[in-house]
Image (cartoon, rainbow, N blue to C red; front, top):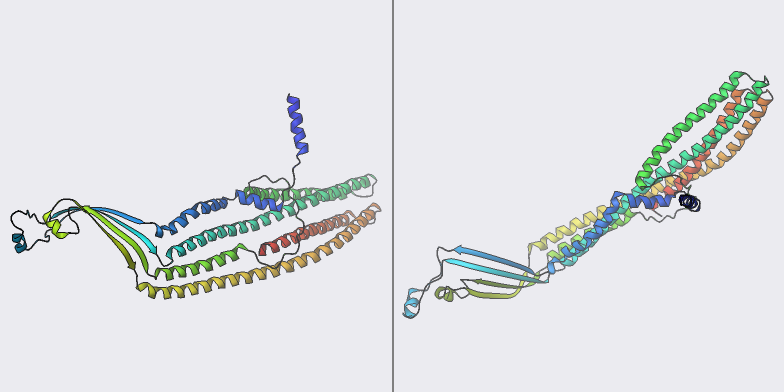
Amino acid sequence: MCKKTIFAVLLGLVCCPVFPLTLNECYSLAKENYPAIKQYDLISKSRNFSFAAASEGWIPKITVEGSVSYMSNVPTLPQGLVNSLGTGVTYQGMNQFQYLLTADITQTLFDGGVSQSKKQQARLRQEELVKEADVQFYALNNQINELYFALLLLEEQLNLNTELVTLLQENVDRVRLMLDEGVVMPSDVNAIEAEVLIAKQGRVQVESSLKAYKSMLEMIIGKEVTELEVPQMPLQASGVNNRPELDLFDLRIQSAETANDLAQSISAPKIALFAKAFYGNVGLDLFDNMINRGMKFNYFGGVSVKWNVDNIFRKNGARKGMLIEKEGIELEKELFLFNSSMLSMEQQNLIDSKRLLLEQDMEIIKLRKEVRLSSEKKLENGVADISELIQCIAQENSARTSAAQHRIELVKHLYELKAINNN
């Protein structure tokens, strides 16, 4: 049974290879792992509450109130009228202690568009919050780009370091044979062995940086990083700017306009139905209150029109404030587009520069390799010394390192150009 289990595990490892992590996968993982992702759930949950609050104006308003009061003076019947009532009528007068339970009901019929404007404000605010979260994730993607391409460059440096150590070790073996033949001095062997150690020291430094960058990327995406895929060079990005900040600017402009609409709505008259019922020892009939001190039920209702005239003067100020705010937001948007255009031009210049440097790197590597091979032949023939060979190896490795750096930087700049316009 144990052997079958081990075989199944091994078979699973063979049949389920681990694929390199891609840049797009890092974007997705970071979005799922980043704490700000919870904002989307909170925004979604608060949407219904915000709309409900904006619709409260149409909900009937019911107020219940109870009171007990003592009045120092109350209305009384004229003495002549009391005398005319005759002896058969008991006149107690209005009670100075009054008990009253009231209920007021109001139902809006026309609010001038206030509720609709508040709903629009709530909707725009929800969309603004979503776009603000999108902007945060956009900035996060830029951070991932920096770490991702830095790791690719460090891994390429490790590969080049391995090739350098292998090349130096081959020459160590060659020089030792020459030492046995008496062609070179022991110091020549020591010199090239020292270069091997220096190369291995450089590997330790690169591995340390690689570990640190991996830790930062793993913290962001919430997953162990074993291998990264080198992205293909993307197609040239279009000139259309799809950055989330632009949508946020537009939403802010709409919010300013909606705030102005709300100010206009507030200045309009309001029409409502109202009703009031009360139960107590006083009622609407004052004469009955004076004769009968018992509990009574009364009510009245109708239609009310309310118009705060001073709001008419305030709405002009609100409109001027809206126009100034809108102009300020449009200026911010224009400045943002200008800066984005400048960054795009800068990235395009860097891309053109890296393409040219990469073409030259290939030619330099070819020439440096030929010089190094020639130096190895000269050393075997006793024409050149070991220091010349070491210099040639170092120059070839430097050329390969520059080519690797320029190649990865070219891809990085292409992705940065895409990120500037988010396309």
